[in-house]
Amino acid sequence: MNKALVVDDNADLAANVAELLESIDLEVFLASDGEAALELLERTPVDVAIVDVRLPTHGALPTGTYEGDGSVIVRTADTATAERALGEIVSTIRLECR
Image 1 (spheres, rainbow, N blue to C red):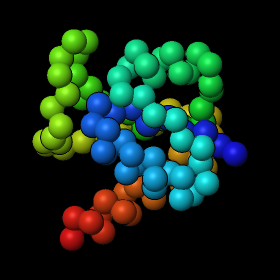
Image 2 (cartoon, rainbow, N blue to C red):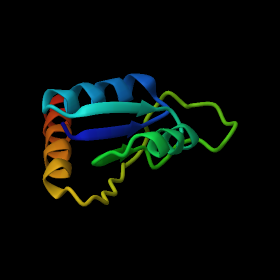
Image 3 (cartoon, rainbow, N blue to C red):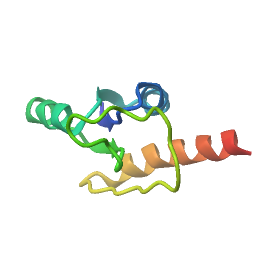
Image 4 (cartoon, helix red, strand yellow):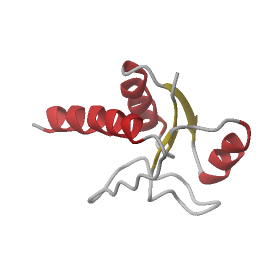
């Protein structure tokens, strides 16, 4: 089973993304910040990572909101897994925004 990492300080959003990824048969790991993500990656290699590019700085409180445009940066040796994961997320977001 392919593995995915979701890194986001918004626990509800991370859980929603994890549910979408699990629906396409990915084993999902969650981290709430960069430090936790790096610790997890030392123990468990993943095939794809979905990372909030606006994580708060160390010591800052999570905002609990999402404002503005998002960014997606993907770097993986397993292109098919990344395409499936992003395709599921994007199609679901588009449906919910209509």
